[in-house]
Image 1 (cartoon, one colour):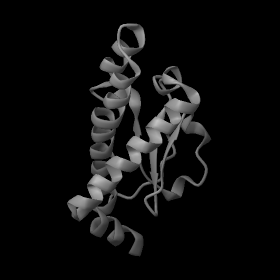
Image 2 (image 1 turned 90 degrees about the vertical axis):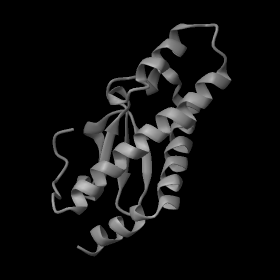
Image 3 (image 1 turned 135 degrees about the vertical axis):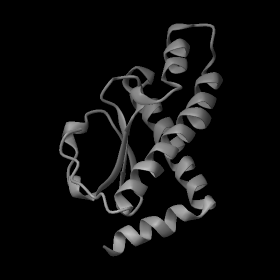
Length: 133
């Protein structure tokens, strides 16, 4: 279980938590740039964190390969700021900058915190296969 001790070490320092938030924000912004806001708001869209701290956004969680390497998974629809993203999507008055700030700050921060919580649960001896996503 050497990798789990690395998870604890990685997340015990605040600068790593900030690094995770920046990675999540970057992945979300790239995803929106390529696929659009509509795809981000899809009910199946989630951020996946694998061993080695690889973070990616995926639209269909059933298509995840190597599930045993997944440390944490968080769906966009489960985040508190999801409703703000829906408002931005439906209101033409909002500019692209508002969307970028919401994704980069609020959504990324909230998702990084959830990924940390889930990774810590695994590190506390509750390692399980992610089979039902």
